[in-house]
Image (cartoon, rainbow, N blue to C red; front, side, top):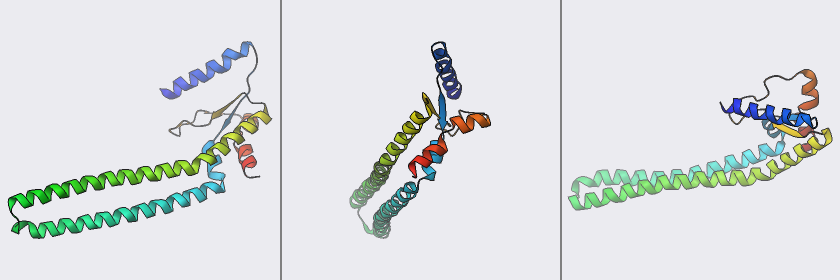
Length: 175
């Protein structure tokens, strides 16, 4: 449904302006551009290291919590009902804190990933704009939707060589 709507809007944009002038449209596969850049590998490695660090921190906390649970199970039979209930509540609260901690750690990783990727994404956008200007393109479309569904279902060999600017952007970024 979204794909059809997007395609209809695209067709309307292209044909609506044709009464006044011809618009030149190119397309790009930004994922292919991103994968071709060596900086991406460095960023992925740094994120992977950060994830390992955060996982180790969390595993230490989980291990401590599991030890507390074992100690409680062993000591619970000798506890008064009041002490047992109090300790169960404390452990339940600790479990909730650990769940919140996991969410915080995941958010930290995502924020760091965004911080590291943002300069690269800006560089890619600038290269796309530069290549589009060099080629005289009015519009540059993403070759795929966010769900990896192709927007451009077919393009001739001539269109691929003239309108697909993916390799030209990669070349500009890797010069």
